[in-house]
Image: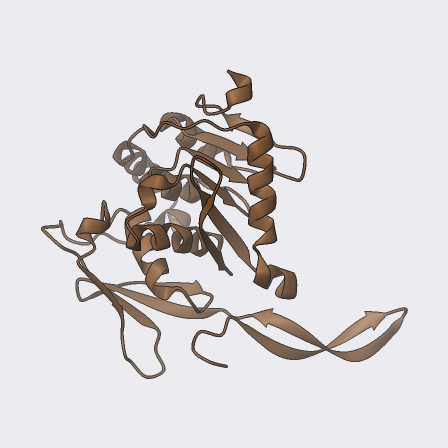
Amino acid sequence: MSADEPTVKASVQRLSRGALSPSEATLIVEEPLQIIVDSVPYTVLMRTPGDDIALAAGFCLTEGLIENAAELGAIQACDVEDANQVAVTRAGDHPPLRPPRQTVASSCGLCGRELIADIMRDLSPMTRPFTISTERLLALGRQMQAGQRHFRTTGGTHAAALFDRAGEMLSFGEDVGRHNALDKAIGRLLLDDRLAQACSAVISGRCSFEMVQKAARAGIPLLASVSAPTHLAVQLAAQVHMTLVGFLRKETLTIYCDAGHFEDLR
């Protein structure tokens, strides 16, 4: 397996018509990636190999370590044997690094509530002008699912696709982690300085608070998922004036927050 090979083969036993027989399965690769920020080991993500630079760039933006592409002073993969590392050096003056946002998931009680409140206060309302029809959004959902090349062979990945106001796909990310998939899609546009063109994001999997947070930091006014949002995701979307859609399927969708972006609902 090469360093960036996203899938591997495995020998399995398949049950068919009451009998087991030898077969072969395709598995999605999951490996750790360490992100180093300003020479400080910051976090380790479990991800699918490939697009590591985009993943690290998107992570730094959506976690609030940088505000825009100009603050991404330098980013490069480290040449370390038997280690997956990307080093990020931020441009300009920045406050000391805070613990990764993932601590929200393991916190509880008052501390967790305070951290979530801090995140909400840090996010600005959506101001990017944009409208779309429900019919067009359904088409974007089908486009995202059609792009899941590794899901079709492994059944083990998530995906995220970013689209411009005309419905053209700008970037696509696929990974074992739904957060990573969105960070990869965002990071690609950040590195190309095209993130301001993204008006809608379509993702697979559950739409949690963190997914809304990432889309909000990227300034994306509409987030749609094939699955359900959490109650906290809906609260945050409403606060930042983001349109939030769940259960985006072939011909159906559920609107949880309508920030005025649907042409046919005006």
